[in-house]
Amino acid sequence: MSEEFSRPVAGHVPVLRLGDVLLVTLQGDLHDSTAQQLQQDLSETIARSRVTGVVIDISGVEIVDSFLGRVLAEIAAQTELLAARTVVAGMRPAVAITLVELGLTLPGLRTALTTEAAMELLAQPIVLSRSDGLRQESP
Amino acid sequence: MPEHEAGGTLGTPTLEVRDFLRRRREQIAQRWADEPLFRTVFTVSRDEAVEAGKVVVDALAQVADSQRVEDPDAAGFTGVREQLARMGAARSRAGLSATQMSSELAALWPPVENLLVADLAQASPEGLRECSTTLSVLMGTLRLVAMQTALSEGQALIDRQRLQLLEVATPVIKLWDGIVAVPLIGTLDSARSQVVMETLLNAVVDQHARFAILDITGVPTVDSLVAQHLMKTVAAARLMGAECVVSGIRPAIAQTIVHLGLDLGTVKTRASLADALGYCLHELGANIVNATPDDAGRR
Image 1 (cartoon, one colour):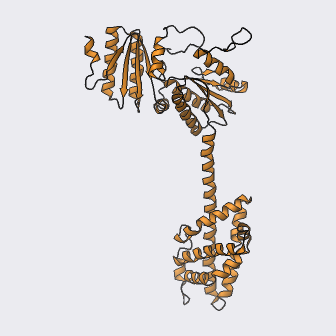
Image 2 (cartoon, rainbow over the protein chains, first blue to last red):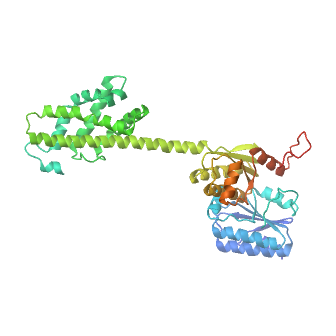
Image 3 (cartoon, rainbow over the protein chains, first blue to last red):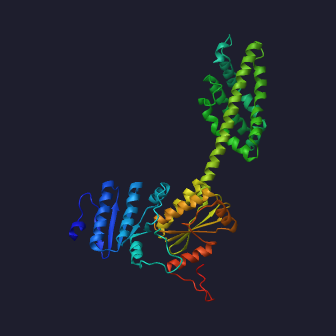
């Protein structure tokens, strides 16, 4: 069962499992159907394998349109439902500016500067309420 | 063209004017060299002023030759544009307004007219009048070209300075490992906030900054547009994985924001840059211990 999703398939984005975390690296232009496929793959994988976090590295993506933005937000929401956290890592400045100009500020999406920072973020305990400095991610 | 109809035995007035300009090139240039426009620009030597005058006369003759005395875009003017721009720049440096420059240019006309009258003394009064009209039109076009050139020079200067201002006004300062700050000074318009956003986000990537502080102490007023720009920058930084703190909100600005009903709820704000730095350091786990036991790093 587990080899089914760790093997890269044409038109699929490989999902790597590192301990309790799933790592997805997006590269170049992402086709809409591929993005949707990824969304489905991720939810199935999380449901089966009890991971606690998902890191989506988009440092190789130069263009994020409103569709991909929405898919990212939906992935975050659905992993939350499956008791895992999603962190989007390595967004480029140009992509961030485009998304903001499109009005997609994606509240509720966890972000990190690098994959490393994302792993660190996921290593922190889920309850972050140690002080008033808590990041208010989920509404 | 009206010049053609009034041809007569003398040839068309434009060609007559062209011949006159070529014949009297030296005298016109000599007389112009005494006019304030040339005299004040070429202060070093009179010969230089005469040479400059000759270039302008040649250009006028060339324009008359092409029969386009009313056209400021005539090919003949391209050669003198640079020189006219230099003269215009020199005069505006001396503090002359556009009106004064225009009247100085107008002062070039009478000496030429006197020469023309003397030169065509034996011609019919009608022919003389036509030549005089043509020449005056030509001089008017020259004036137009000179003013055009001077104004476009000024515009180019303004554009250059605006660009310099954009570069100068947005330094990104590294305050600590992982903390960068941008002190904003002056009014935030769309163009500037765009530059601020880009430089800030690039600095976040370059310096692996987890925190970015936007200090608005130097921003005179915050209206809904400025607030919107700030929110956009904060949102973009958040998307990249950095947290943005807005600091330097003066009491008056805080009041304005509340009066305008602007919702800065999603933005972390602090009163001063020091407070913002303290907050970021605390979040990074670097606590600053005061001599007094209370927690000075946080507010």
